[in-house]
Length: 215
Image 1 (tube, rainbow, N blue to C red):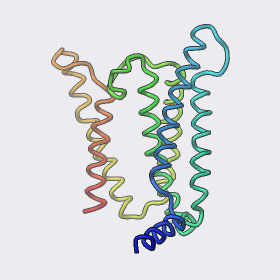
Image 2: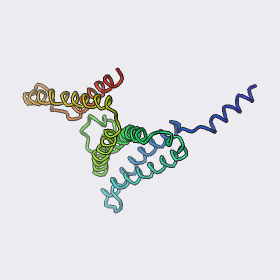
Image 3: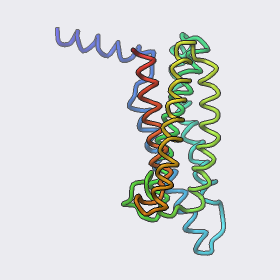
Image 4: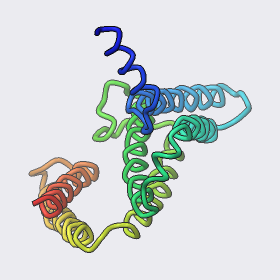
């Protein structure tokens, strides 16, 4: 009986038509780690008078290799993706792409700053030029693509939640920002922290969006 159960389990695993979570996670984390290592090494090499690729270029090349490896892995499950509609594939691609972009951003910020013990998002520690350029390009271009694809695929219900969440995030920024600014000028509060306000808008946006979408 035990032998029969083991055989059945092996058959289920062998016939799996959808991607697991382990290998995509490993590929993403390894790519993030190598982007930071390569960018840091190349920038340090150039600062020492060496020649060659910039840290930004090296990080982008590693990212492209990571994307290629992920594509090869997901290609094994072509029938799984084909069962989805084009709208669903674009929708999930924009969501997963944004999640990967967040992981890559976090890893690069941590590896590229001079003070490795500081919080990567709320620290003003200096970044290497290569990492800074890479982050700026990844964020501005990546988010622009993900948002444009996402907006084209959502239905009216989700669009309603998305628009109200965006408005709530806007208010979460424009209300406290001027108040914090004038109070800081009177030395009643520390200088305005842009990333703290940014994090506040994201939290408010996410809470309102999830409440309206799933209530």
